Image (cartoon, rainbow, N blue to C red; front, side, top):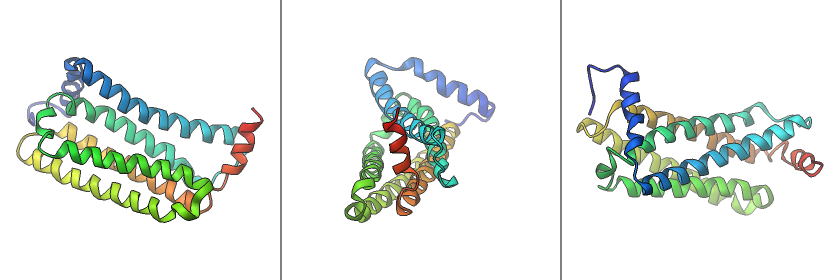
Length: 197
């Protein structure tokens, strides 16, 4: 589905314009999925902003968490348009299942990282396993996307959105993991700031 005569920008406009083809169910799925990820971005950003405003000094790598999340959310907001329209049928060949498995491991690893503030010792290994599986299934998904692309059942807009999905997710999750392994510096102080609001 590559259009050699179009610029990348023109292809992107065409890709995004397919949102007009959404059915009611497509809108429900899109708003629920993107809304959940925007909620994650908002929670992370507001938490760090509250701490920073209250004088908390975070290690500089902590800011990679909202940056990576922003990249991830922006990319999935674009990618999901194609998944709910032009590529919906192509995804039914197993790719949709891989997406669901990847999302499951991605969400549970983030939930685990949040719970690890109070239960770090018991959750250390399960979280590491969940992160590893989210990466493995993300790479499986990439192989399936490239297979579709080589069969002309994808386009460069979808492929670039996947590059940024992977980039954003890896920046976010590995920065968050590092923060956890360092004992979450700044979190206790931020919770004290929030209690005073």
